[in-house]
Length: 277
Image 1 (tube, helix red, strand yellow):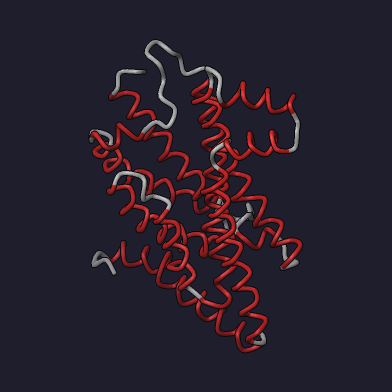
Image 2 (cartoon, one colour):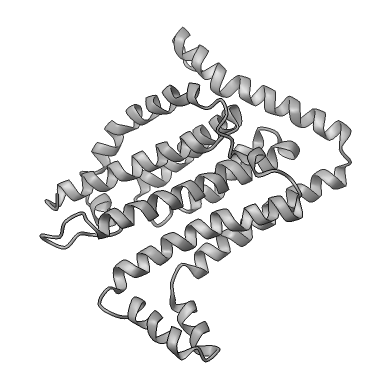
């Protein structure tokens, strides 16, 4: 815990007290809930998480869509798909396809499980808006703290090789393609936050208590293995902070805005270093 009294108070309010409250709620839940019921829900959440991550890994390329359309004899749609994903706009369209697959996998599959299988309300999985305005300063503080590290990382070769995912051609303006990409990019971050800090954390907290945050961190960190090592390490700390804050606020929306702000800042810095702005 930080030594400064102000920081100690902040840390206690956002982490230590949250851990105590979540663990106490979990203990109370397990006293009144049969073990098999608690285990069933936990297993459903974890298996769903595995299915979502598998979908994202294997469905991110449009190759499967081309093969599927060709396999069922839809020649007209196959020709349209080939124009999109094999033609001159292949790179941009493939990137948009990736972003949409991310969003659908992160959102649609968990929502289906929450409402149909678990028969619970999605608002209980981090989608609440009520009462979150008062927490905005905390996330703005986190954004301000992260900015110097982002600026430093943006000067490295590994960072500039990776970002932005859509590289502007020399002389190309931000509109329309970069702006369209940023909208899709932002949407997939909303989906990502809902999946990790909403579905996983709030779905596992009743059986695992605060340990749900650490269980979530493992697959979240693994998503960053293809990114610069500093970003992968930062994902561990970021996953912990955003997971704890989601438990405190019962909402993922500020976390999504923070994630979007960081990602767009990274893109803009990379474009600036490359002289494309």
